[in-house]
Length: 240
Image 1 (cartoon, helix red, strand yellow):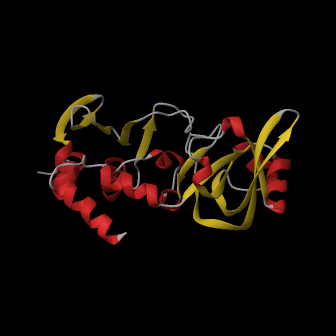
Image 2 (cartoon, rainbow, N blue to C red):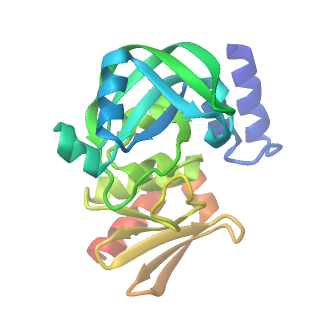
């Protein structure tokens, strides 16, 4: 495995592979987790007590069969009734998977092991999950807010972490408040400033009150992140 990784890095340095390939390739090696919403208090209690979760096979997202863990997204209504936290807190390793049929409808039944808790609850902050998501366990454990789970490639994470170094008051605006329906990150918001990047044009745009005030080559984020961080810091804090 190590020699393969070294070869992968070498070919990237030679410019043969796109710059996001390494992070994309590494994500395929990480444990996958199926994030499922719980919108019924009785269902929540049964899942927690019986360590069993059942989902219609027709609504499961792509790659669900590769998942090793299940995480529960508890809706606000359920949280208020059962006294749990709204968001994602509990996860469990999958012990067994069975396909069952009820009234001509196929279900995938997950038998789970013991429940574990994340370091902190992943808060919805205006977003929610309607169906289900397949994400990596590393991303789940690193996230503090629901839209962070949308981040897919290295640029997403790198820019997000860079902005979080400037201030903890950073929000992600997606093109839908349903995480499983969203297709892209529209902007990262810091007060009156917004930051977005465009893969097609290869540019990062920094805007103030909807007016672009700075354009940074996306390539610089990949190769010179320290310089990009300083430029963003100078803009946000208006230093010389």
